[in-house]
Image 1 (cartoon, rainbow, N blue to C red):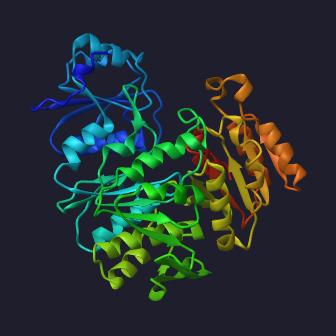
Image 2 (image 1 turned 120 degrees about the vertical axis):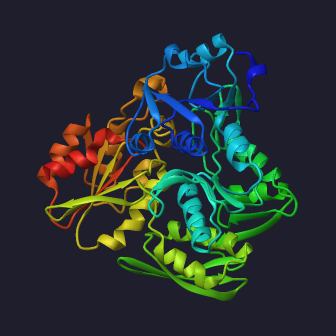
Image 3 (image 1 turned 180 degrees about the vertical axis):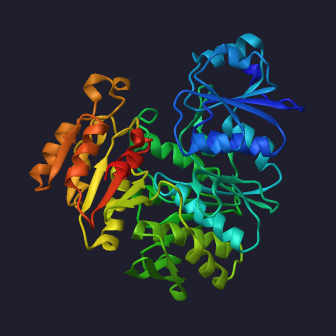
Length: 473
């Protein structure tokens, strides 16, 4: 690959995106089209909501990766981070002498330039926290831009090109591209940043927690003096990295010594009422439709940044009460015969545990049936084999699917769904193993009763299990 072509020319009209259906790439494609560019994209794993979102924007999605997709010689090729140097379209880019760049490079050049970035980083909660902050800014009249790894229900979009000075960016720790193995978040310079958590994840690119820490350490050390870092107060890994920050640090969480503290929480379905304290003094009483302490902590972090931007408390209260969450985050997909089917993106053990804990008080009248598909590059490995059994305690019935893409993982490092089920049973849980999605659907149709909540957790489409299940219930 000729790295001298890793540049963006001055006059760009036609842009092609390789692996366009990723959440970040899809949002970028739509932004580029809205900015007046001619946009095409290709991908081999296409599923809603992103596929529908791109089609609605009249963006041509080409099936698979083929040299022919680039024969029209676009001015620029944007290469997704999951794309390898052997990808047929990457090979064609080199062969045809086309200019190329990464997603963060394109975002900086076409969207971020001239704006003030607000960055949300962390292993968990990035999408929800970024979405809350974007909605607060919008309600406050700031007309922010944003690019977020999920579709915000308030906007019906994962991006917005606003006229205001701020842009909210979900700052991902995943690598940038095959020609740039550094984390994506190193490409952005925020005037304020949020760090929610630092845990081991993305086992396909990070060797262990220390490797993850080194990446976040670089993120923190890149924060400029005069900028704000809002950091979660109960993460020892975060604490070990903060000495490298040159900016102003404000902690948030449950600690009495933190400037931003979450007070009493009262679930009263469909609302959650909660208090926020600042510097030990009452800051405000709020209500939200968000479920779970972890989501209220996400809201607290967004409030800390919003206060830094001098947004009044009454506007914060209005925004939190009207925030409609993100698709695939505790999203009710439908109800049939008294059974509620909910979709959630949870896949990391911490996310599985927190999501189940969050929904429990809101569905006290029936059973919580957890359906889990280990599908990520981390969850299909055995790194959390002994951790997952501890994460399903709030569930009354548990269905575990065989990982669908195990062929990608070396045999001696593969996660075992059968072992997870055995370990859950040893903990006294009612758990079942399934080799495919159809078997789960057939089981649930017979097993589910009126009042039950079926919580389906996966970072993928899960073979459209939600709609298929609702049709059969």
